[in-house]
Amino acid sequence: LQRGAFPRQIHFHKPNPRIAWEGLPVRVAATEVSLPKTERFGAVSSFGFSGTNVHMVLEQAQDEVTAETNQLSRPAHLLTISARDEVALRELVKLRRDELASGAVDLADAAYTANNGRTHFAQRLALVASGASEAVAQLDAFLVNGAATGVHTGKASMRAPKIGFLFAGQGAQHAGMTRSLYDTEPVFRAALDRCDAILADKLPKRLKSVIYASDADADLINDTEYTQPALFAVEFALTRLWASWGIEPAVVLGHSVGEYVAACVAGVLSLEDSLSLVAQRGRFMGALPRNGAMVAVMAEPAFVREAIAPYSSELSIAAINGPRNVVISGSERSIADVLVRFEAEGVSASRLKVSHAFHSPLMAPIAHDFERVSSAFSYAPPSIDLVTNLTGGIAGPSTITANYLRRQLLEPVQFASGVDAMLAAGCTAFLEIGPHPTLTAMGRQCAPDAKAAWISSLRRDKEDSRQLLEAAASLYTQGASIDWLAFDAPWNRRRVTLASYPFQRSRYWVDTVGPVVPVSHARPRLPVDDLPARVGSMLRDVVWQPGVSKSGLIDPISVSQVVEPEILQLAELNNLDAYADFLVGLDELASRYIVRALADLGYPL
Image 1 (cartoon, rainbow, N blue to C red):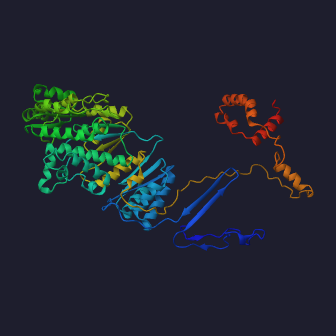
Image 2 (cartoon, helix red, strand yellow; image 1 turned 90 degrees about the vertical axis):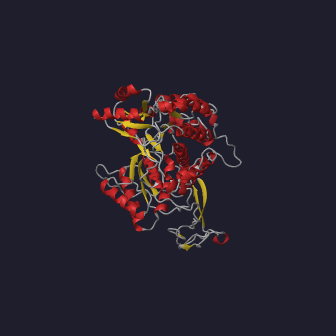
Image 3 (cartoon, rainbow, N blue to C red; image 1 turned 180 degrees about the horizontal axis):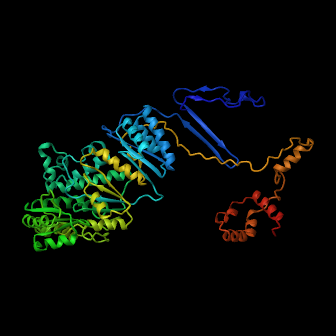
């Protein structure tokens, strides 16, 4: 069907004269037969002695590609290559490299074909490239060095990785974040549009106009009233996009306002209620005086607690992000005082770019009102493991309440303990959900010896779609299962011909052992008069024919009842469970031969 020609029948020279060919609607192809250019159909049949009975009808594949369903395409493509072992992987990399270098296939179509049309084995490689030339350069570098920028490698285990989602908090936002994702990914766009519609009457300006603002209004994204709902909407939309590709979390942890996204994803709050709470939270915080500051201190929590103790009424620990990474938050005056001490003692400390002193006593004026507002909403038990900010442990069925959300305004984020809880829950891959990585580096510091992958969905300094594909490539090489059809659903890709798997062939030939003994080829002639009868007795045994009683057949049920107890005992003693139920498949013919064989062996029947 692909070549447009039907091959001649091998070894066929002349038709059998005993077959009435003129009365049959078929003929044997003595020579190659050209097929029509369009509407080609073919059939393949298989009939075997073991019971195979298959007839498959095939139709010519259509080469035409319909119009793109999405106006803008991704600026880069993700190509996967996998094999059973490293040797085969390198061979397949060479084949893919040569195919792309030849110009015979387009990278987007090659990636689509490889991702959807090949079995994904344990030894994996994935690359992200904008075109064939870039992909060829990456594969060349991998073949020479065993590694290359933009090339991800790994070995998938029998069990898929347990993925934990980390939802970023305030500080990850930036003007124009996720613009290209909004333009190219329909699932992301639909989710963000939904959030924008829900918030339409809850914010002074439409959320999308703030996220994708012109240069004149770009700084609005750093206004707390907009920052918090914007981060929520972007992170929720990212989660929906990942879910459409088959990537969903087993455990979730959000940092500060990110905890609201985590709670929503875990089913504690509905999307509408989550957005209402976040919008109200941002509005309350934005109305507070901007007289506070936050500082990241590279010191142990015990040292920091002792240093800020004299200022407990206006200064507190806002987050414990690692063994030696503590954030303090409070009034500008108290911050200035402790910074003098840190500098004198050689402790590294740096101010954070924030509008308010979050998670500090300065949030107390809004705590009561926010709890009152939060009490109007209902909170369901988490449907997946939700690690909380206040305890750093996994939430119970009724952990998240209005009072919990009040305390979350004032008390520190126990991020380091939360990472420990996720590791204890079995997470081996951590995917940060946010416009820029702020949590993955801290996660590594919390667990430097953990055999875990720390992956960022997006980066401020990298094109959105490309970074997202890099993250998908990393997850794939960790063993994650991606829904590749959904991954390419917005575009009409084409299946193309790619080189097949490079099997690592082994020779299993039995070599001759010992001297070769010459064999005489002189054979006695057999009398031909009784040959049919003798051959027939060797090949068949007539037990039934029309008009003759089938008394020669034996009821299989009676055979099973006699021999089953001892067969089961033998199977159990010799660990032969696979043979314990073979009697179930007996029929009348098989029973007759089994009884005869058992009788020949002296079995008492």
